[in-house]
Structures are given as structure tokens and as C-alpha cells.
Length: 404
Ligand SMILES: [Zn+2]
Picture 1 (cartoon, rainbow, N blue to C red):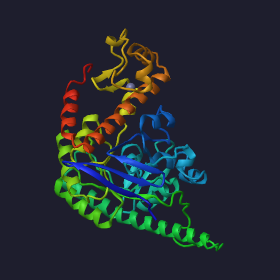
Picture 2 (picture 1 turned 45 degrees about the vertical axis):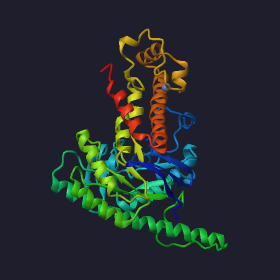
Picture 3 (picture 1 turned 180 degrees about the vertical axis):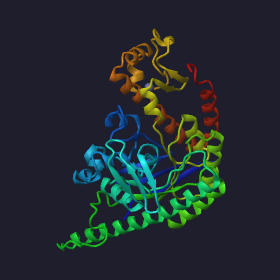
Picture 4 (picture 1 turned 120 degrees about the vertical axis):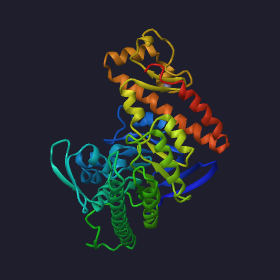
């Protein structure tokens, strides 16, 4: 049985301050989840993530399924134990990577057939299999398998894809219930000291985290009526939380904000709302203003490795010659290890020399900036000063991109 529980602590306009409980701890919302694709956030130690204020990280099912494999991870006691992160973990379903990374994919009603981008091996990911894999990984929050639409898509394409995603969501929920019931029955049996193992449905899956929750995903592209239909179908199935998928895929930012706000308004107040794959620091602030509680994005980590840094004074491209003899910290307002110990001049040197510490130091700073921003957002909502915070944040954001 899922032990997931979301509590709405307060609101300021449409912005929400809350927290959710998982088997591995509590997460304050609005929350940003650093992306740990292969069971690690690139160039960051778990210890440093904790220090930077990360309460939950994300793992990618597609990558972990292909390498080292979900069954191997289950035999190690699940993802938390395998990677030694004892805080909450969310796993995606693998759908997005099948659409963006895998080769020769064929989507049928049954599921998605694809070839691994690593070795060309053929695999079939069905909604049921996506649930099974995430049960073995034992994340605290699993996601349903959805069909990811490319942008732009016609209304007919978006409608067909959204309806298939809704059918897949039902299948995911049924499989999830089956595994939960089996895990519960097994726990009851061992509590009553009965030794015989049942061979019923779900017995072939080693469930690593019986308290796991399952989130549904709202699709429908940029068509609001389809988004509304998707929200109605998905909430009718019933999930512990709801994600908005298929945005931040190339549509204009105003469209993204518009669809996010409209869709969030139609979702249950007592469940967390997760905007998948967004975004820039401004996107986080703007989408919190529209009722979003959870975010994930590779931007802070990927940009860090490319020398693009977010600061309270603007975006910095550390390669730029203007930093060659700049002895100031990256961001005077930041308390991270990088900013407390190193100068822009040194960070530029490390980057140009191709040193691995450049990636590590830059990643630590960018993640700290994102997580600090979330902390400031939460405080502002709690004090009901979110709108003032938002105006100030966007003003400083508009001074950004000094170097681009
Ligand atoms: Zn810093």
C-alpha cells in the first residue's frame, strides 16, 4: 500500500506551499528534483546534493533498465540501496527516452518496441512492464508510461496520442494495484509466519519498495480541450499525484505557461502537480505562480558542464575572456562550496583546460542556485509575498545573458 501523502500547507494566489511524505522521507514543495539519469546526478556526489538542499532526485528507467538492469538492481535491494541515496527518488517511465534516444521505435497499442541506443538490442516496453521495472527499482514515486508526442503535432495526432496515453495509464494503474496487492499479501503471510509462497499475479516481480506511489501524466499537446479531456480521464483512474507531460519540447514559452496554468487549475487540489522537464529558473518561478509543485530538468547540470552558470546577477558563460582575471566569486550571493572557495578566473581556467573539477564545481553551483531559488519560492509563498518575489526575480532575470 502506498504510504504517499501530500499536504497543502498554504497558498498565495495560485502558488502552493506543501509537503509530501514518502517511505524515504519528506519533501517540501515547490520542489526541484536534480536529474540522476544513470543512478547518479552527473558530476555531483550525493553528499553535496544533500548539502545543496536536494530532498529528492530523479532516476531514468530507460537507462537503468538497459544498464545495469532492473533485476540486478532489485537483487541489490533496490535503487536506494544500490546507489546509497536514502532520500526519496522519483523514476520516470522510460517513455520519453524511447521517443528521444532509442532507435527504430514502433509504437503499437500493446506498447513501444525499440532498439537500445547502447547496443542495438531489441526491447518491448508495455505499460505493465514499465510498472514492473519501476517496482524492481523501488523508487518512491513511479510514473505511468505515456506516449510522447513530438512538437509540432496536429490536433488529430495529439488527440490520438493523448487517448492512447489515457488507456496506458489505466493499464499501469491495474498492474500497479496487482503488484501492491501481491506485496501486501506476502507481507501479511510472513507476519502470520506462513511459509508457502503464492504463485499468483505479480509473484514474478520483486517489489523493492512496497510504499511506492504512482503518478498519472496529462497529455494533449498545446490543445487545451485535449488537455482537459486528458485530465478528466487521468483523474478518473486516480493517482497519488499528477504530472503535466509533453511541454518544454519547443513550443513558445507563453504557450507553455498558458497550457500549464489552465491544466493545473483542472487538477485535484489535494494532489501534487509535477511539470515534467521544465526548465529555466524563470520557468520555475512562472509555473509555481500557475500552481505547479514539482519540477525536474537537466538544465542546471548540463549547462554547468558546458560552462553556462546561473547567478543572482545574471547568466555567466565562464569561457568568456572577460573572466580571465576576474577574482570575484561566481555569485557573491551564493554560499556553495564553489563560490566560497574559488574565483571566476580559476573556474575559467579549469573549464578551458578541460579539467573534470570544472564540471563538478560548476554543477554544484548551478544546483545550489536552483535549490536556493526553490527555497526562496517556498518562503515567499509561506509569507504571502510570492508576487513581490516573482517581480524581483524576473527583473534580475531580464538583466541576464550578459555574455550571450
Ligand atoms: Zn555558488
